[in-house]
Amino acid sequence: MGRYDFRFNEETLSYERTEKKLGERVKSFVVNTLTSITMGFILVIMLYYYFDSPKEKSLKRENEQLLAQYKILDKKLNSAADVLKALEQRDDNIFRVVFEAEPIPSSIRRAGSGGVNIYENLENMDNSKLVISTSKKINELSKAIYIQSKSYDEIEIMVKNKLKMLASIPAIIPIAIKDFKRISSGFGYRIHPIYKQRIAHMGMDFTGTLNTPIYATGNGKVIKINRQRGYGKRIVIDHGYGYKTIYAHLNGYNVKKGQKVKRGDLIGYLGSTGISTGPHLHYEIKKNGKPVNPINYYYTDLTADAYDSIVEAASNTGQSMD
Image (cartoon, rainbow, N blue to C red; front, top):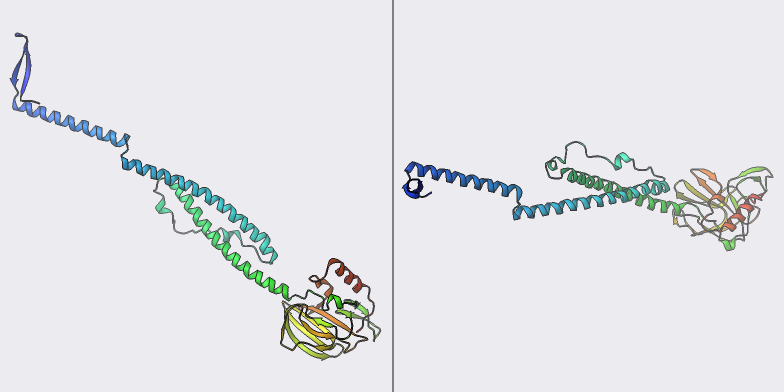
């Protein structure tokens, strides 16, 4: 874009320098400038669309790393959800069955959030489906874990209550195995030794020597120590959970009314007080006020053979000692 221009002279067959007019110079300047600007703009656009800047490359790498981490997290969440489902099934089908509790309904375990769309702010993100799906899984897993943790808290309470109940249920024979001689009468109808009539016998009679130690068969509280017609000296223990035990025809006491006792504590001594034809212990178990057969509760301190022997002895008695 100089001030001068060269033109070919056909007559002289040479180039001659001529001075450009101002308008031509301005026009040439404008055309060249616009051409340069256009080419530069095109070049910038090509660089922008087809070549990444260092910052863009860095952001892309970060985005790819985040995407990979999301996919790994998604797999881990699926694995955690499978483990949690196994715990839930064990909770409902084992623990709650053992402790006689109702399983937690799936509607509670899988309760949705509902209402406002809490994922709305994620919908415009890149890979929004994956991000929203992962976020939902995290929220659902968090809620399910919370519900399961509360369930375990309930089971812990049930375990403590169950252990307390198991310790309270009458579960041993009231006489030490070494002092046990024989059963003179089992539970059910038998011939009364004095009245000579067939009368219901609501307990079991253990024969023994005078003052043989008698033991509490479960944890509880002594609610009665008195003489009663027919029973003689007796002790009544309330074990809770609907259970009471009665120890009758005693020769003496080793506890006081209101005293708390544990299974195996010495509470009295075998005797022959009341209506009795010889030293023995009359032992009863009541469940919710109704007599039950004590033979069904000797499962803590007896071997299978010893238990079978007691069952056989109790079934072969025809006349009691009281």
